[in-house]
Image (cartoon, rainbow, N blue to C red; front, side):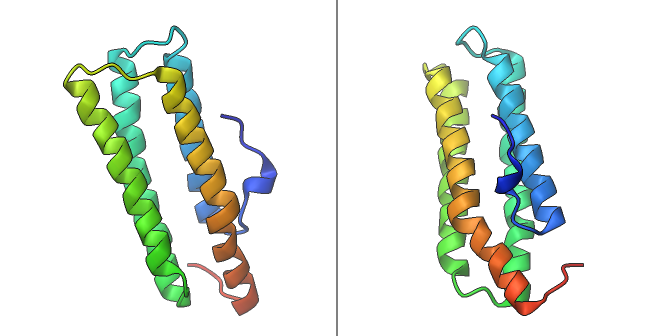
Amino acid sequence: MIWYDNYNIGVEQVDKQHRQLAKTIKKLQKSLTQGRFTPETGETLKFLVDYTKHHFAEEEALMEDIGYEEIDHHRKLHKKLVNQVVEILLNLKKGKQIDAYELIDFLTEWLTNHIVHEDKKIGKAIERQGYKPG
Protein backbone atom coordinates (compact mmCIF):
# COMPACT_ATOMS: atom_id res chain seq x y z
CA MET A 1 0.00 0.00 0.00
CA ILE A 2 1.28 3.42 -0.90
CA TRP A 3 0.45 6.46 1.24
CA TYR A 4 -0.55 9.61 -0.60
CA ASP A 5 -0.73 13.02 1.05
CA ASN A 6 -4.30 13.48 -0.15
CA TYR A 7 -5.25 10.77 2.39
CA ASN A 8 -4.45 13.21 5.22
CA ILE A 9 -7.54 14.50 7.00
CA GLY A 10 -5.78 17.44 8.64
CA VAL A 11 -5.56 16.02 12.18
CA GLU A 12 -1.92 15.09 12.79
CA GLN A 13 -2.53 12.34 15.35
CA VAL A 14 -5.12 10.64 13.14
CA ASP A 15 -3.00 11.09 10.02
CA LYS A 16 0.01 9.62 11.81
CA GLN A 17 -2.01 6.57 12.82
CA HIS A 18 -3.38 6.18 9.30
CA ARG A 19 0.19 6.24 7.96
CA GLN A 20 1.12 3.51 10.47
CA LEU A 21 -1.81 1.40 9.31
CA ALA A 22 -0.73 1.85 5.68
CA LYS A 23 2.84 0.95 6.63
CA THR A 24 1.63 -2.21 8.38
CA ILE A 25 -0.46 -3.24 5.37
CA LYS A 26 2.63 -2.72 3.20
CA LYS A 27 4.66 -4.90 5.61
CA LEU A 28 1.95 -7.53 5.44
CA GLN A 29 2.05 -7.33 1.66
CA LYS A 30 5.83 -7.88 1.65
CA SER A 31 5.49 -10.89 3.95
CA LEU A 32 3.07 -12.38 1.43
CA THR A 33 5.33 -12.06 -1.59
CA GLN A 34 5.02 -15.75 -2.34
CA GLY A 35 1.27 -15.75 -1.85
CA ARG A 36 1.31 -17.79 1.34
CA PHE A 37 1.10 -17.10 5.04
CA THR A 38 4.09 -17.38 7.36
CA PRO A 39 4.39 -16.94 11.14
CA GLU A 40 5.53 -13.34 10.42
CA THR A 41 2.34 -12.80 8.42
CA GLY A 42 0.22 -13.90 11.35
CA GLU A 43 2.10 -11.62 13.75
CA THR A 44 1.79 -8.67 11.38
CA LEU A 45 -1.93 -9.31 10.95
CA LYS A 46 -2.37 -9.53 14.73
CA PHE A 47 -0.48 -6.23 15.16
CA LEU A 48 -2.74 -4.71 12.50
CA VAL A 49 -5.85 -5.79 14.43
CA ASP A 50 -4.50 -4.49 17.76
CA TYR A 51 -3.30 -1.19 16.28
CA THR A 52 -6.56 -0.74 14.39
CA LYS A 53 -8.55 -1.17 17.61
CA HIS A 54 -6.32 1.41 19.31
CA HIS A 55 -6.69 3.82 16.39
CA PHE A 56 -10.47 3.37 16.24
CA ALA A 57 -10.80 4.04 19.99
CA GLU A 58 -8.84 7.29 19.67
CA GLU A 59 -10.73 8.35 16.55
CA GLU A 60 -14.06 7.66 18.24
CA ALA A 61 -13.01 9.65 21.32
CA LEU A 62 -12.16 12.54 19.02
CA MET A 63 -15.58 12.26 17.36
CA GLU A 64 -17.21 12.35 20.80
CA ASP A 65 -15.19 15.46 21.73
CA ILE A 66 -16.45 17.36 18.71
CA GLY A 67 -20.01 16.03 18.89
CA TYR A 68 -19.67 14.40 15.48
CA GLU A 69 -23.16 13.74 14.12
CA GLU A 70 -22.27 10.55 12.21
CA ILE A 71 -20.46 8.86 15.10
CA ASP A 72 -22.87 5.91 15.36
CA HIS A 73 -22.51 5.08 11.66
CA HIS A 74 -18.73 5.48 11.90
CA ARG A 75 -18.54 3.17 14.92
CA LYS A 76 -20.50 0.51 13.03
CA LEU A 77 -18.00 0.68 10.15
CA HIS A 78 -15.11 0.31 12.60
CA LYS A 79 -16.71 -2.63 14.38
CA LYS A 80 -17.47 -4.38 11.09
CA LEU A 81 -13.85 -4.15 9.93
CA VAL A 82 -12.42 -5.39 13.22
CA ASN A 83 -14.83 -8.33 13.17
CA GLN A 84 -13.87 -9.18 9.58
CA VAL A 85 -10.15 -9.13 10.31
CA VAL A 86 -10.54 -11.09 13.55
CA GLU A 87 -12.48 -13.69 11.58
CA ILE A 88 -9.63 -13.89 9.07
CA LEU A 89 -7.16 -14.42 11.93
CA LEU A 90 -9.32 -17.15 13.44
CA ASN A 91 -9.63 -18.88 10.07
CA LEU A 92 -5.84 -18.78 9.67
CA LYS A 93 -5.40 -20.34 13.11
CA LYS A 94 -7.80 -23.10 12.08
CA GLY A 95 -5.66 -23.75 9.01
CA LYS A 96 -8.17 -22.48 6.48
CA GLN A 97 -6.82 -21.26 3.16
CA ILE A 98 -7.11 -17.52 2.52
CA ASP A 99 -6.05 -15.85 -0.69
CA ALA A 100 -3.20 -13.56 0.34
CA TYR A 101 -3.69 -11.13 -2.52
CA GLU A 102 -7.42 -10.81 -1.88
CA LEU A 103 -6.63 -10.03 1.77
CA ILE A 104 -4.20 -7.25 0.83
CA ASP A 105 -6.65 -5.84 -1.71
CA PHE A 106 -9.44 -5.92 0.88
CA LEU A 107 -7.39 -4.16 3.57
CA THR A 108 -5.96 -1.56 1.19
CA GLU A 109 -9.32 -0.78 -0.39
CA TRP A 110 -11.06 -0.62 2.98
CA LEU A 111 -8.51 1.75 4.51
CA THR A 112 -8.29 4.10 1.54
CA ASN A 113 -12.06 4.22 1.01
CA HIS A 114 -12.71 4.68 4.72
CA ILE A 115 -10.24 7.56 4.97
CA VAL A 116 -11.38 9.28 1.77
CA HIS A 117 -15.14 8.84 2.28
CA GLU A 118 -15.57 8.78 6.06
CA ASP A 119 -12.56 10.14 7.96
CA LYS A 120 -12.23 13.21 5.75
CA LYS A 121 -15.68 14.23 7.04
CA ILE A 122 -14.23 14.26 10.56
CA GLY A 123 -11.39 16.50 9.40
CA LYS A 124 -13.87 18.90 7.80
CA ALA A 125 -16.04 18.96 10.94
CA ILE A 126 -12.98 19.77 13.04
CA GLU A 127 -11.95 22.50 10.64
CA ARG A 128 -15.44 24.05 10.68
CA GLN A 129 -15.44 24.08 14.48
CA GLY A 130 -11.90 25.37 14.82
CA TYR A 131 -11.27 22.49 17.24
CA LYS A 132 -7.68 21.86 18.30
CA PRO A 133 -7.24 18.20 19.34
CA GLY A 134 -5.05 17.81 22.43
